[in-house]
Length: 383
Image (tube, rainbow, N blue to C red; front, side):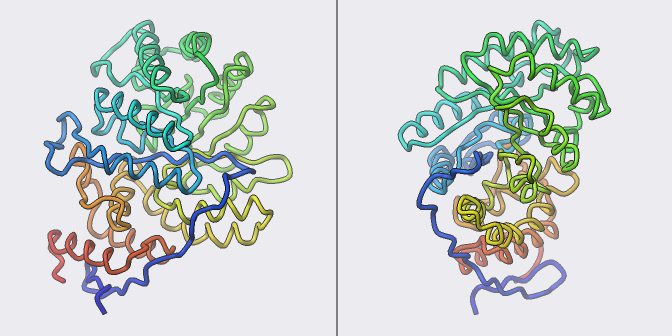
């Protein structure tokens, strides 16, 4: 048997491979679903910590076509693409431009992150933060993507109260050319964002967010919430004005939140959806048909994988996402911008391998095994 890998600790693990999920026959009807896509580094580039990112554009765009083919919109230049963890703004702007152009050609949906990460590290005034957001808002608008107003490390450092957030965001929403998606990323994803919206207490912060949304409901398409707190997300969802979507970013509890209840459901903007696209697409197609049992059956094996990939320290989840993309054949190397392929241990990635295989997400077992053996050999695990 060729699809056998020796894991750390000496166990010889046989991969079973392929899930045979197929491609949905029609667009999703009951939920809006975006997958936050990673970027593929150029293995010949100087992608070391602190260096400007050098991307493999062909492989990066091919992965986005894979997501569109499975029915997902692409959430571009978000946290999953290593914003603030290796992807500089020059590369970000070009990434958004290229993906938006590819979306027009492919007939796919795309939203793109707007932040302040082109500012130098260190203090900034509220006016400088606002102007930085506006510059990126213009860049995304010129590219032809819908903006996602991402959380800003500069804003959380500059703001002294909730009113400062309301002032900056109100100006942005007043000047936005069309509907935008707000973004609430918790400190488990980026510790520098602790206390966002002016309060450490989520209930108090939610009051500020809701005030902003209610004052600008015609400009806010929805809010993406990545707090890994199912109960809080449901409570916030039920308080949103009519017509404003809650896009779950909860990579722990997404099946329940998307399925919803008698009082509503969450749409999706998820990093894990890029990694599990075939299974997630099949599940959403089942949900469209009212097949709740099929939906649960298809997503259930992906949850242990997602919870492991997004385990503490959560912000290194990108390493697991790229490792899985390599094993699944979406890129031909395991290299990341900023050297982030070193962000998880061989023991952690061995569990990613096991759980992805159990979920049927490795379409070619022999290819995945050969690549895993190469990785573990270099990591000091003889094969």
